[in-house]
Image (cartoon, rainbow over all chains, first blue to last red):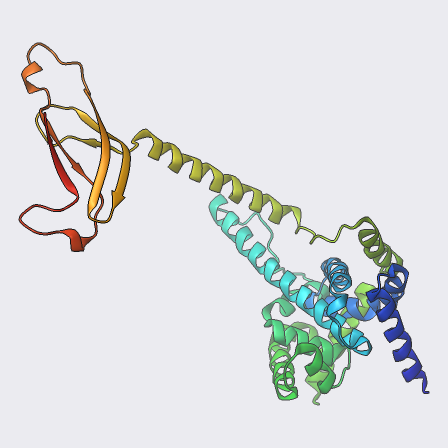
Length: 188
Length: 150
């Protein structure tokens, strides 16, 4: 058996043990997958603190739904899908929050409230990317992060996103087009 | 893949690597483990500012509902008699069956009668129940209206 095969069967065994209620086994799964989960969430949200909250929530959700995972060998794809959904949900909440804050600033009559969309003269790369990712659709953000950042093949990106490879190619293309415009200052 | 695309991917990767450079991985795993151990599986609430808006919205909603309820209580099933005088008709209980409407009515004097207007005390009133349009049988009559003479 190859190293990859041994690793997959090891993960499958941990998943089965976790499904049986073994929290130590689940802790091992968390430690094995948390880095990839964090890279995905940070890439989609553009902020490590938001990403940490999303990943923590996703891992707890994964534990409670572990019984619905029929094929233990697909744990990674299954988990990344939960993480992506959690990141999307946070991105939407952030947009709603920005709307509230804009509304509040309008009532006050002056823009004293800083919103995530506020343009800054000296914004750094982190802020610029966070703002740019917020301009993408959920699918675009997910696709560009999985394909462009994680270097996953289109087939795996499609499995995680639950759509066809043609769709993922289109989402990656659209995301890059938008990011090229939104990040042009940093691409010089 | 053209140069722009490579640059975008490079930028995204650099940003993520930079942010995760000093991330406390052990803390994340421990936080998850602690939540599983304590059975705290509920979804964590959002940030304080969002919570504040949510609380404010909830308070406004409660106040609004309370105001509507109080306003409705001030005029419970009250109707003013259309006859002479200024009596108020209060429909104390309503009951409706198919083709038959029933209600108990109490009549209160709205103002103390003065010696001059004792003759204007109400002698009749009209009680009207809600009805579908199909029950309107024309000639200013309908099945749900009832004239009471005293």
